[in-house]
Length: 463
Image (cartoon, rainbow, N blue to C red; front, side, top):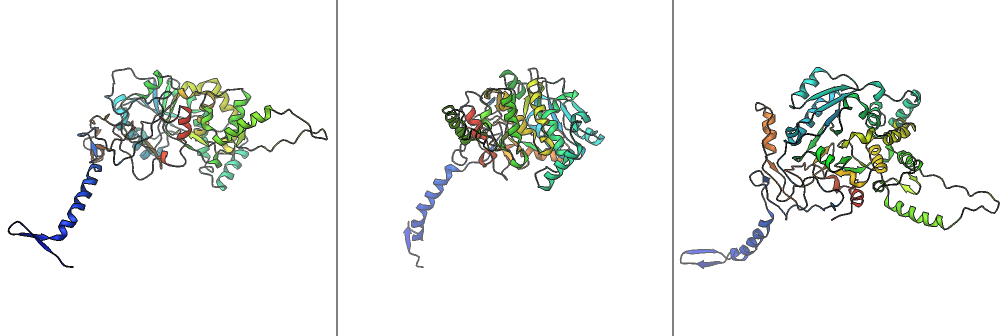
């Protein structure tokens, strides 16, 4: 390749190729420069990176507005709600419990100091008790679950129970072959709120082992729920595995119809939209024709019943993921909820199938509550197993972070606090406070299993 040289000044010469290449290079760097931003941190709390991170779709907030957009200074001068953080765990789950508590304390409870109640169907050992008490300054209580709250009912056939659970194990239904899992689901579906140590509380926040919170919660969600007439709060709504609940909707729908309960707008969150349209069409057709006999005066043969369909409705498998839920305990203690649970329990579905407490709580909310009584905590970043919700940080609503180092002598505590010194970029329509989300998995709202559109429809659609 020939290098032509040109004279620049008296004694300087440069390759002609630079004159050809330099303008495109300059244009390239100028083009990418506006899209590059440093990570947001406490020294730079209001930086918005519009060119790198996509905006988040805004939800109509007329029915269910976000309690807090971005950060606020925690107001600890107000009285707390009569509430408790409930953890169902076993001694062997201590490492996961400690991780959850560290996250809860760092992002919320270091300001509000709500008590913890640990429940177990066995006694907690001294190591468990001492370890959890070292994580928090809050009151910590320990309760044992009595057999009448944990075990299957006396009227159920033990052989039938054992066979039903064994068959689910043979079919490889997730957790279906584990009797302890069935006990746990039934306990959370219709028994936990009857534990005597919960009797003095009005509100509860369920905390599971091995969960992670991504955002600072600088307000008191119990107080906001109480002041705004909310009954049930969630942060993730997804689809259930059909093999675990093949007949649950059939019984829930049957209960609703047997009590002549009219939907207040929540039931539709759990209906397949296409079948809902078909049901309306069928009602019009049925209204235009009379019951008739065939030529031989016999009644027409009924159509076979699809276990997923009742009264023309089909379950879309959506449910609020109840390993995070904040709720008013009076909802579960009500006669209507107790009647609902007893109706389900008598069916045997808690052992012949693997009914989870999440779809049970959700369908109960669908039957008894209105959309304005349910709250979507879209500002709370949360992860359990491989499912996470990340709300994105609110533009121009971030505040500097106060360090949180429980043990200054602990290398782990020091490193963890340094990790939270920086947080994610702000996003248009983001609502979070100092969120720093995991990047190894896709946010649940970006997956096919998300049911967020059904909830959005119930509260007025996208903004």
